[in-house]
Image (cartoon, helix red, strand yellow):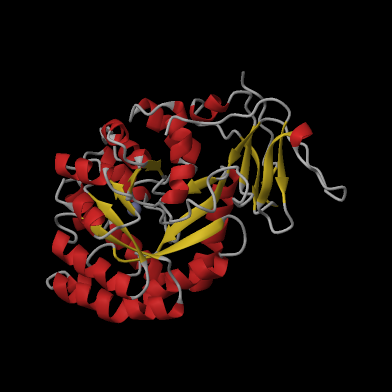
Length: 396
Ligand SMILES: [Zn+2]
């Protein structure tokens, strides 16, 4: 993960008519066709950033929860006062599809200005067939405008109030009624589940993910955020593409995930926003040969943050990742965490020309400055995704 190739002498990227990289290297070494149009850029050109974990479709912000936490109210008490995930569920159920589309489009535009060219977006604030489909249709209908979107069905995000006393019946509903419709309509590439004591048990999560596999969905899991209860081990057992959170992963989980193809996705913004110290074992997993990605977890409750370079800076300062590892974690390994390692996350021949330009002289500055947007332009498959949002001056 610490092995980056940096081209600093007269570098150029040749992009074909289909939006893929045809060649990359020293400009004088490339065979440039005569009819080629040229764009000259200044700064450091990175592979487009891949945000592998967001909950971008939601209604209202959760400002009262933020204040409640500042006053020392804990998670359970916040939920009892009408906050928490279920307040976002109520908000999504009450908000029209058109309004959700408008909000989601605006948020995706901001993600684009921060350099993300691929964004995974989950449902999970509907928790009924109708409201989950509404969220997934929003995701489907905003797709196509940049950035590129990877849709995930997260019907098992929480047990809704109407099934509070009968969680297994809700799991039945997700597996038997929601998932086949989602699969049939082609509204999701992935299925995710919140595997955590008090939300869905390991056995319930296994039922959800096995059902998803039968419907042709790839697997993701929210695992071991608060308690190392076997979520990472389940992810490895079922061949999940990623296991996300992992702040409380057990030693057995670290061993299992390090020897697997499942990507460990860490979400340092969530820990920061909730006021927890981030001790997720990125170093141990990297040392044992595992793949680590960083994502924003952008959501209204626990991470209203949208900047992957900021996650990279926190990866360095909180998780003790090297700057090169942090850059890999938001590009190459972000792509792997959405099952797209072969198509994006690298500037290399045959990969999509998803590119992000930052106004820096040294690539390490990307995960150094924070609270600053260094991104000046980006492209998805060679077409402009974001261009010239303000102008950032070189800071060193
Ligand atoms: Zn999440």
